[in-house]
Length: 188
Image 1 (tube, helix red, strand yellow):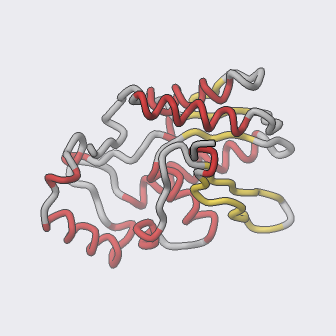
Image 2: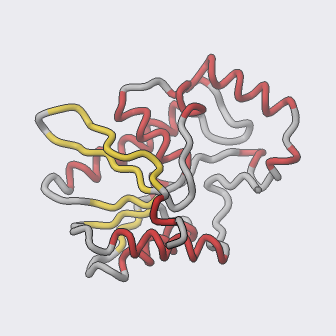
């Protein structure tokens, strides 16, 4: 596996296209009022699969792009050494103060993502919206919605083509209704 941050604008793999189609079929009976997507190709391709079952235009949201991982962009995960392990340990203790070398600060990333989520929520108060994004975007939104510090990101696992559902209502804090559900990806 390769680390893909905001600098990797890659197409979905064949497996990714199959997963996107399964996700789209699983969402076809949900009454969506809007579909937002990161502008990165892999997210747009997934959003397009979903949009085929709904009469909706995809709204590209640049602030939903994956985190800018700097020098780690394109690195094989298997090539990472103890420096990355130390980075993760540092992340667990310092949270948002940690920077990806040559990349984005976690606190700034959180602010970018959460501002986008709040904007989407305010534009769609009475609707049900699909937001197609990336691993760190989703995990960060979950942490922020649940009031968890970014040090908890390492405790949240988001699978590709998974469904995570956050509920936003005026009468209570955001609720996490579903986290990284991949039931739709299982063979029938």
